[in-house]
Image (cartoon, rainbow, N blue to C red):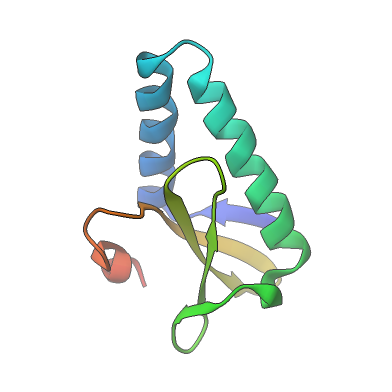
Length: 97
């Protein structure tokens, strides 16, 4: 299964890459690798992730970085709705539904 970003989710994802790269050279690439690893797991087994918001919005946590990936399956594609920091503005992404 493949994934695609909601445009706002893609923007925040790219901001995260840039932020970590500015903090330390190579850290943005580490973030990107962790994101891709998490997305592989999500795409392989989307039903194993807990529902964050009914009826179909699920969440997968990154292990090394403080982010939750909020997603749903639409027509066989994983739609990434947000790459949300665990301690900032809960539910800000609801307008993307």
